[in-house]
Image 1: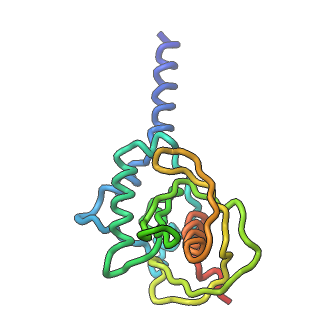
Image 2: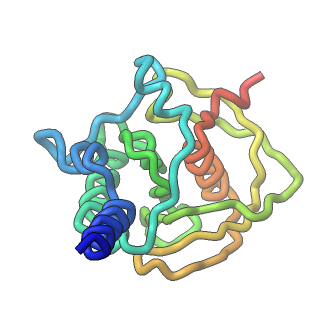
Image 3: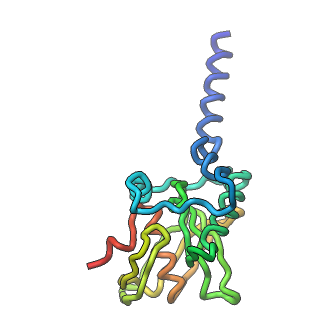
Length: 192
């Protein structure tokens, strides 16, 4: 009987470790009265602490959960909000410390938004070019930041299939900005 109880306890503990999104994350994902999520701002002390935190990777089983599709849908609605429109958004900006970004692909026909799971930049061009940047989480600041114009990106898609691609131009800049959010960095950290 004791062995049976230990086995049940171990299985319960294992299930709780792999269940995916936390209850706090689910509350944010499903919370609110509208589709547009609250965007965290550095003007709020608690928001700023969250924005300065490092995000955790998404696991394969999390991507097949309803929480993931709801989060993606709501993040897309948020970044396309005509009152505060952007070209990219990272999950930490809506209070979810997971490695997920949505980027508008100016390098593709129709300039679609796409989601990238656990993205990482594995190579950057050494040549930096200054260009204007702003951020949904940093209100009223827009300034030049030096970024690489060519990156190699490794990521997973919504089927959790791995990919690696070379991205250039403005879209490469957006990726660098959004992936910085996953590591608790903001574009203002690069300002002189």
